[in-house]
Length: 249
Image (cartoon, rainbow, N blue to C red; front, side):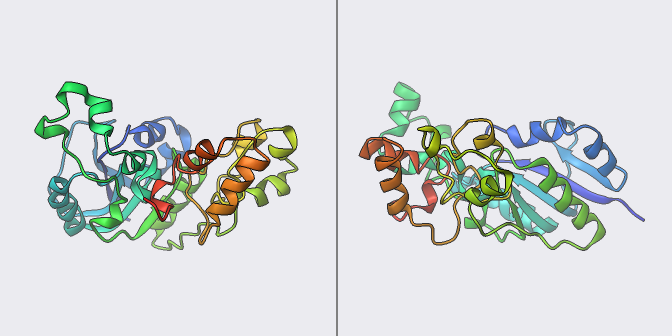
């Protein structure tokens, strides 16, 4: 069986998802028995302009100038996968969408340089058609391997849970962060990671995005009344990775 030609591309991101792939070890090595990487900036210098079976795109869409490159990737790829929070929903980059003065705050006197000019941070789907999305910051190892294996075998049925992280904590017997005097976004956060952060005593930040029709106003109220956060802190806390999920984005 011919190997599936795969390429990895990056846009506005820290490229942490690509780096995470290089840390996968044996499971990723096993994938290479059926996958041929033809472009992968973190691991190889070669590039391709040829047709691609599967294109994996990391990072958010923040510049209109990138649209042509994205459209070229879409034209050449049979399947496009947006992987990681930035590509799937805009991720932490979308915090800039709520700041009028972010350019000056970040770049200072260099803020007007042309190459620093950018628009709102949006998911890749805002520019091109995306076939599959793998959320998370970074994306979950097991989920990525499972989806790629399905794509290689031509049996992809990508499943992302529709329930919140709280259900995974309950299933795992994890002490609720609120019962420990902490705060957490678990009630509105999209599950699928098996809730490792609350299990380690760390509040969920909803890095996989939010469940459909999440009641964000109620979540902010819980953060204030039970998490003991200020009103402003509660509002910004629920934007960490999900600024584009909010109606005021």
